[in-house]
Image 1 (cartoon, one colour):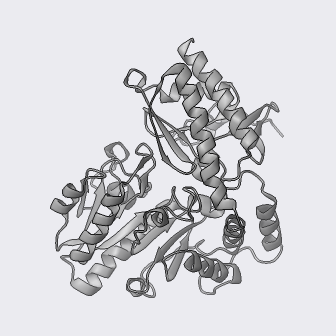
Image 2 (cartoon, rainbow, N blue to C red):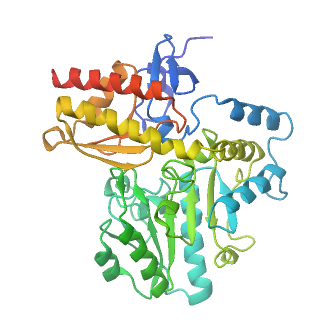
Image 3 (cartoon, rainbow, N blue to C red):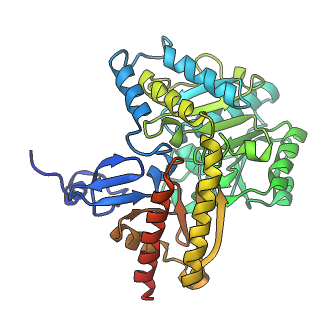
Length: 402
């Protein structure tokens, strides 16, 4: 077989991605190895997906066992892993009902469709408007990219669906001015991920909940990136004590296996009646078996509590780096979703630091041009945190020349 090279990607793949020059071939825990056998510490986690690291034994076992039994049906029939996973999710969250799909975009698509249909069924067609926030990200389908608050993702795809407006994030008065009797739903990320790792304030989420109640609108939380233990609770809304009507979940939900879920209450679920929505792979036995293994691991005693301790170790290490270089304007986030906004003089150069980090054997992310982002495994060993931060310090030294 002809060896696979990075150049072949450009030959055969649509150019919507621009992957780095290395090709990883193996992962274990918080480490990845490329074709040349070089080792990297993984602080990226597949963009907050590999919540238990690479090749976790419990996930490998779940996939292997289910793969030897039943791979796929259709939703003409149910299957045991799907029902078991839905039951587990309702036990762990506010939700009463679950819809399974294959990605975060699909989960948000389902959430938004449910919100509009619920308003239509209960209040009529005039109540259809959706309020989102500037800087938000909710997926890449035409509907979700329209609801997302970043114009660059909509360019060239217009006309986009109507009835959607955007207000500044964390600005309760702006939301109060926009919401009305025509509003079907407000969709928020408890922490804006792609928008710069910016957490919502307590007052903002509480106020959004109150405004939705006053206007018979549904509150949707997009927890695709913040969910499944990332913040130290199973879902970020639990940190705030503010319950949504609908919530989307994906990324870490499968620990690396593609799965998404839309969770909702009994009050709104009936609006997504038989025949109104579907997903061919939604509830796939393989995906659900792996996802259930993820949740079983995360709910073991002490696992989620350790996320906070590991986050503190990260922040202490980052503070030491900044004391040396003075590049960090603000370190923010929650749990092991951490963002570093660079000083104004370094705006636009986050990718330079990420590239230098890769050269030093560290995989990490950006959240826009000015923010470094970390979303490692939630069970990353302390020694790997220290090793990765040492490599980051060296990378920053290479970029700054200091």
